[in-house]
Image (cartoon, rainbow, N blue to C red):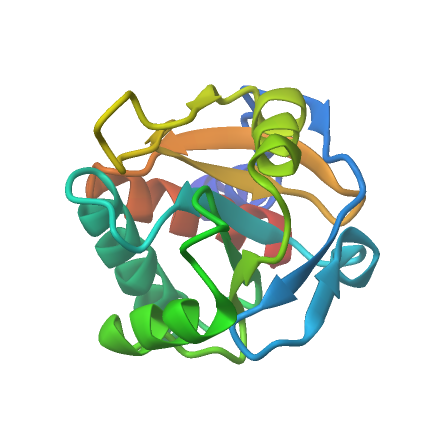
Length: 183
């Protein structure tokens, strides 16, 4: 009886959410110079973050954590997409993003790096869809000020949870949440 109770409790797990925000429609350019839109992501779970390639601070651990997350997802056979939006689209061309992806051994089968928009467009997406501040670099700097969260987006295009992207512990939280929603 105890085993049955534990089994039923485990099967009935629900995702504990901390957000509910619809992602605004987009159609951006990938590192392979292809387009990727919100419509194409509909029907799939995905994890998003906001980074830029010449970042000297938070993007390094964030992208490293996203890479570790991708490896762990493969180990656990969890099928979700990873999306990294560049917050410096003027500098981050598809070619620059592709080189950046390769430097982190990103498997581009399920991890896309997006650009091909102006700063105002990505700011609106970041602020309005992900509730994450985004500001141009201060005078004399090339360092964009942006949030450091990872975001879980459901198949309907709704952001349902955020995690601390610079903290390695978040990887296990995301994996556990993906197990709940994908199994």
